[in-house]
Image 1 (tube, each protein chain N blue to C red):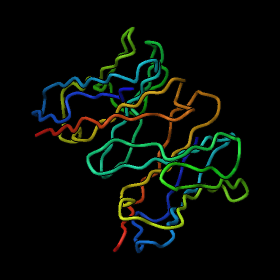
Image 2 (tube, helix red, strand yellow):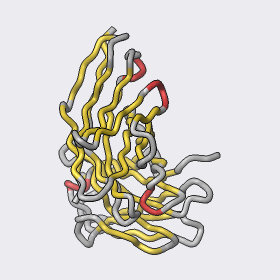
Image 3 (cartoon, helix red, strand yellow):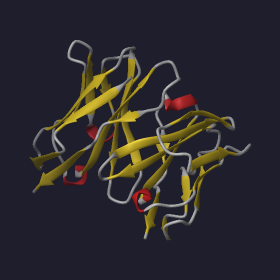
Image 4 (cartoon, one colour):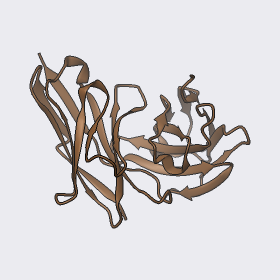
Length: 114
Length: 114
């Protein structure tokens, strides 16, 4: 069974500072990994995905994530936080066989302080 | 290109009633998945449909059911509503099974059971 653990339910950064949101996965088969963002009263928007190509994945809005198999991690980063980045971020995992649905982490709420 | 459309956006029901939620996927998307989002449990998988066939079902009681029509539109039904069914119900569509290329989510239906 697959699972993801997001370390820190709430992260607070200053505007312009580095954003680092942590995600560790557990999977018995090569995983596909995703980061989604959710703004208040909205659905989830796909930020980026890892599907066994390049280990450094670039997404929208300046975010990127690196797949590290040895650490079973897929942390999300952004060099400089903007106020508009304040939202809830979810890491998700599926296997690459097409036989399992996405399993989401509990989410990390990002606050950006002016 | 129109996104995933969920109707209604908000719904208030009384315990014991039943409710039907609707989801229209992006044109050409044949996979539709449903998730329940609550503050306590996070995002939990309900079921996934691909080409009118239920591919998988999450760990929810039989009161939760769904279906997909030939035009890929999907409905989910909850019978005998309980207070604990209050949640944001999210629908997501993908061109492939289980969204290995990433799901596109709708804005959700906020169900309140009183």
